[in-house]
Length: 410
Image 1: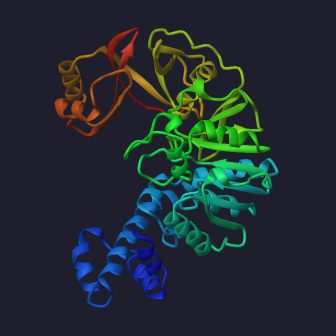
Image 2: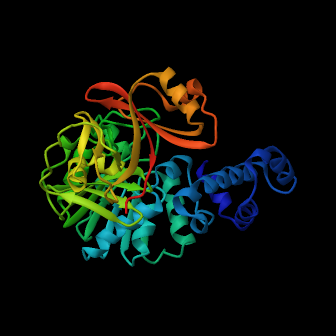
Image 3: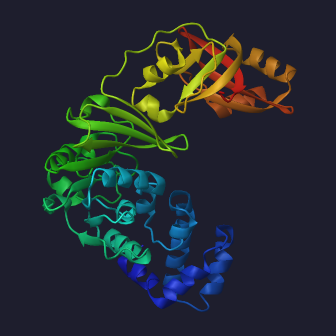
């Protein structure tokens, strides 16, 4: 989408066309496009159909009420923070007394919207003209223009001293928007062409620059990839891993809050597990009656030992993040399963057991196994009315299969 295409979508004709496409079926796009081109310019129809697809995909992140009023770029929609996560982060800043935020690398404006909805004044900055135009349109569409200034600029040139806090969301995908992509290139930073970037110094701007910018503010938050190594977290930062409905979405480095603290936050809730003095890894032992699968945020935050302590549990293997215990206890930080069988890995034995128990609904989980769940399902061909969960993993170093089913703690 070009800036000219986007400008056309913002005209009365473009907005009316977009409104008419709210519930269109993408599988019928050719027929819809042919019909619409009889009444509208072909370029406008193509832009509207593309935007309609992006809006439909954005419902999962922003909800229908906002998604069908907002505008998106393909990369911007993919990289935007899920609304529930952005709202949680905004509440944390509000609870710190923050009333103004410089949002650097703002993308399409998702985080700025969440902040402004709490009455926080926002300067939203991005270097890409189209992204800036989309962010400005989103602020206007949701009635928040009085609280959000959207500015096209290189974030490394922005003065942030007049703001209570700085929020930074460096680009972590090659070829997508980034608040300082041009200046990063000038400094010699390497970026991938498409796909995720795993080296924090190849973010745009690099993590080292973001950390220095964060150190100049009273409060700051840097959104980073959840797979970031713990050893690169600055000593003065709090590191938080956030999951939403069981899926790990991001990590955040907080400055000005609780230096040295690691935190796992589960949404909705929020439910938060945190410590400044992590426990040593728990010992491994035999598989008990119950198996607990810690939430991904707990695993990423290296807080499995804290959950094991709550459960009076142990690991099934020193290298595997499954906790086992002999008693069923409630915890929001792990899903519990009752285990009926602990077997050495073997497809023939598993297939025979599933056939004997008439298991047709098979959930396959793996940790420490090279077998892919879909590959296993094809080989064992489950059939029958019953359900089971099989864990492909290691127990005391040996490839193993654990069979059981989810159970709710009292």
